[in-house]
Image (cartoon, rainbow, N blue to C red):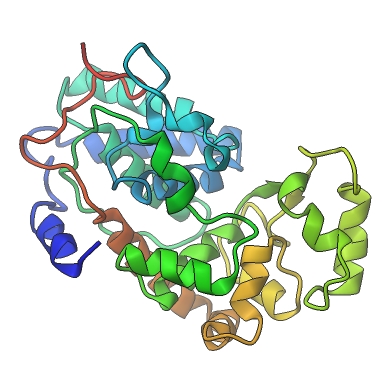
Length: 305
């Protein structure tokens, strides 16, 4: 994506987009999201991830929420998305908004606001969300694999991927810090803990092997860092100690250009929080549909008939 395209998108979004058309939109979303996270603390990580997976594939247009239909092949069935969660939380927030402001608030905007509220509820930063996105009338399953990070990717592959989105290595490291929240499934870190990898703490690997055997237990869970329900900088502290859970976590501190950023965030929670918020705003500007493009879906998992 070129920088000019990002700048044009920014000009069409506004933090007060619903001030007149649905003044209670943001409080309604916040109430819904907080209730969902109170029931399941893992939902904070899930909702941030859902917004990320939306924006990195064809822009922030809620295409990743669409179910299969006669005319739609869903993105949900693509490998990077099969473990995504939180769709029902977005659906519930949308239902509440339709009750107070029918056909006004887009699912793409709900995703963006939900990610912000999830961060804040878990003790992380908040930020002013730019609004005015509209919803896609199509899904893009063939674009998923090439536009989302793979848990086995090397550092340069990650840097190149984020660069194509107009995001810097600092943005990339800050956004990776979302892994301060949540859990990961065994299949995504098995190879890292069972290989003779010098870039992993031996005691950390040994403990994880009890939870994630060499064969079987694919869905067994492990925390992304030592405080998986709290937004903090322990993720970076872990990486410095060679205790990154995923390969894509540890490569951020492996003798490359991002080492200094990881070290900075491990020492300064406030710097990490500020950069995370700034990077989330930049990510939210990726290729939104605005004005007459797309539609405002009545339900988030299907296009309007």
